Image 1 (spheres, rainbow, N blue to C red):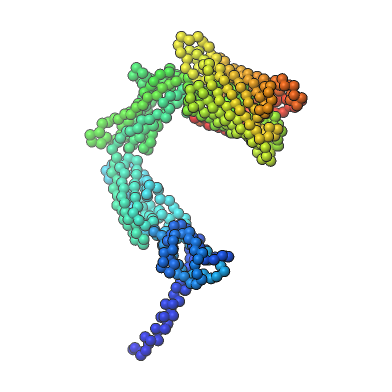
Image 2 (image 1 turned 180 degrees about the horizontal axis):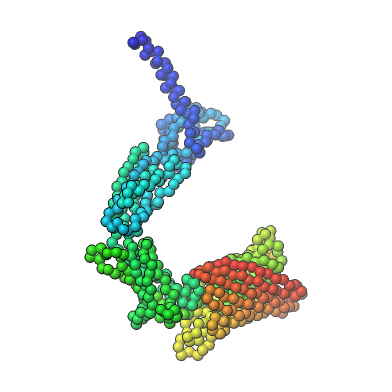
Length: 571
């Protein structure tokens, strides 16, 4: 039964509701974690969003992108709408009043949709199938901030059928499925908000292909420790298979061969340490590394049963790479600079931490209260030339006047030429030359310290002639006379005499160094004779270098001891 005038009775109610609806919606507009609205001193309105770059509409008029600052906004109520592509819109009503500034921070929710990817494999049944799913070039990851996360679940419907259920941002997505031994399968579905998109892909067995063939060290010396004494041939395969490594000399004679593990991934490596089948080091020369590979099981129709790639390497016994102490940018033993050089384009890093009564950096007595530390670096830009740098400080010493640095350059001008014997500095020896296992270099260095009395770094200029006599079998003797001008002020230099044996064997090297300093200036504040000594042990299984060291010193009536360790790397 219809009540007369009932429509007129509800009209006022509908009118009141329509007027109040925006206000009711604005009573709890900050419904997302991260939203914030606050009145602060000032004037106008500031709108910020996460992410930024959202368009801001005020009473349906576009006013700019976030972050947006409107200081000239008049007092009153405004309807705010924030919009950004790929994110849900935010709407709310706000009131701007005089004497205060309204700051509005809004978190925008990303619009997402569902995507179901099914992958069916065909062909070979015994081949492992472990697919990797990539969405826009990256694997889907669980996101705890969103319900379910991008990857909701992966379901194995049957041995040959997999299904992935994902929740992704809206828009066109690039989907790629990769599996070793299978051809890539890809698609570009469109994900829509609130809808489910389905992408069906088929994976087919990959044809076995061998490619690549690149060595990491075109020149190497088997006498170097760890990975520095070998070359590695990298190659790619597209499917499971097996293969072998063969090495041929310059006359195409087979000198080494071995089988390789079965291929279970695209990227493969085969290393060779420069030795023959009996484990003996081969002579200097050019060698060819060859990989012969074949697919596992029955090869595909029309495919050759075996494929090969090759690359050449050179064994160079003069290419010696071993670490030195980098104290005060004077590479060598701790107190005896060495003429040894790195090969061109090689470098070494070292960080040292010392304890005790002396910093020992450049033989300087450390009178501060901190723990001396030093970061050293050496690099060979050209043949016969090496540059070095060191930065020293002291932790816990108050941080004032405890910094210093050193720079040096070393030029090797006399090279050893004992034919057929390993040498100290890694330079070629020519047949027919006299046996002279001697190397000599010229080394100049400059050091600066903010406060020479307290800094662990010593200030001054030095000119040194590092000399080394190589006795063979890893034993050498270093003698390094030099001159030192302290603190860049005194005209008369001090005489430096450094001496020490160095023994190298495999991944270990050990040395003992002594330094005496003679002061002829007659300065009453300086001891006429100072003596320094240090022992060190280095372990370098690969590119990493570990060092333990300790020493004693005497300067006039003062005596002290120190110890420490360092960690570095060499390339």
